[in-house]
Length: 305
Image 1: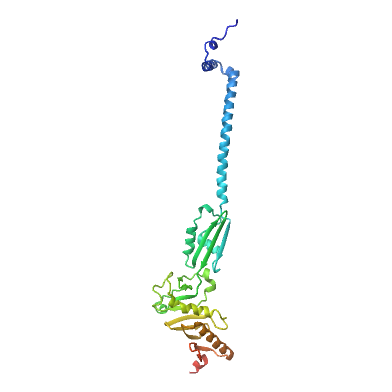
Image 2 (image 1 turned 90 degrees about the horizontal axis):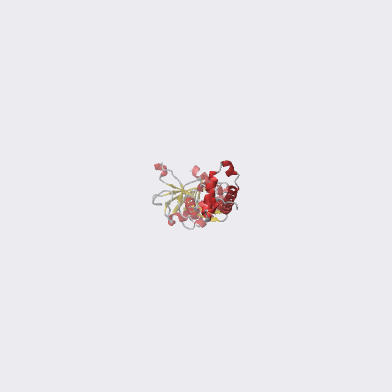
């Protein structure tokens, strides 16, 4: 009977056998260990174990990468690609509004603060109100309502004091700075010279009360119903008394009016000027307050005197 290996016979426990085998292998030369069948099998087992772990981990890594790429793509997809713009009075362009907001070519929906943007527009003196809203997936809506310049306002005492500051006034009586880039079509509106008690503080943002501004707004509205041939442009408006208005027209004529029945007085002025054109006479002073027989002083009569 062939004698068994004493190292294998003396151990019954599998763990002890494995440990003994490792001791035997450690005693072998490197060449024998490299070409050992036992070592080869052990290497294969380790390779299978590593492959199994890799197969488990790889999908997790791939899922994390996919989630990251999806998040980036989603964030990119929320960029603003369309800007819907509406200016109620058509005074400010889309480009000018975007310049006020400081919006560049690339805007991300997630970084927008529409409340701050809206306030930024409303802080612009020539804008009365604004509304901004973001609409998924890629649209920004901007709506603005601009202030309409009715007249320039200037203090009548400016000629004496040298303070010739002018502001625009809108129909609500609000004063705001003259901004030619937005108001190029309103640079020829009349100048209303204010008396000392017409406004508490002469500055942008102040409001002229309704009793003071009402006749002026009615006057401008009534004048706009006529062509410049029928009634030349009004250049200056004075209100020396509560009931009294004095206008200076583009043709140099001075017109005396009262603050009541503005529409009727403008009708009389248009008829007088039509008669002057028909008779080739130049009116120097016109009083349209009387309903019957308003008075006219012609330039020819003034020079004769």
